[in-house]
Image 1 (cartoon, helix red, strand yellow):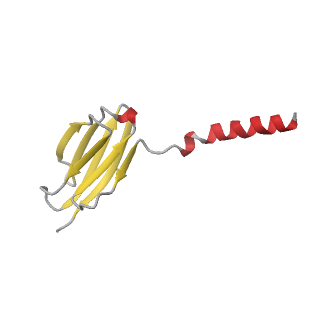
Image 2 (cartoon, helix red, strand yellow; image 1 turned 90 degrees about the vertical axis):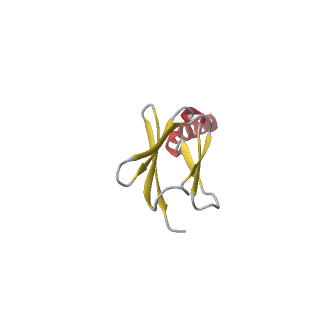
Image 3 (cartoon, helix red, strand yellow; image 1 turned 60 degrees about the vertical axis):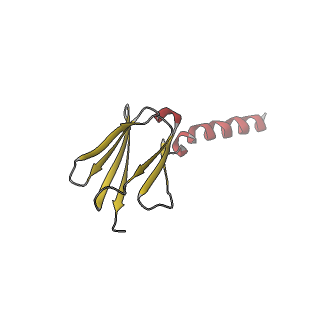
Length: 102
């Protein structure tokens, strides 16, 4: 009986801590090309809006995320700091990208 109580307690504690260990819905995958940002999202984030915002606050591009993976190419933009914002419902993920001289 004591072993059963210990097992139930252990399973309960694991179930409680799993949401705290959950990953972000958006993962940045680094590519070998320095002018590209590759990221992959959870299935729940498909359909989200992806915006690239310059350091002056201007929206460079905005697009709907149709698949789980997206590649953003920064080879045609000026040198500077850019923010990538992925938004769906109440979830917002922001990433910084710095475009250097190359």
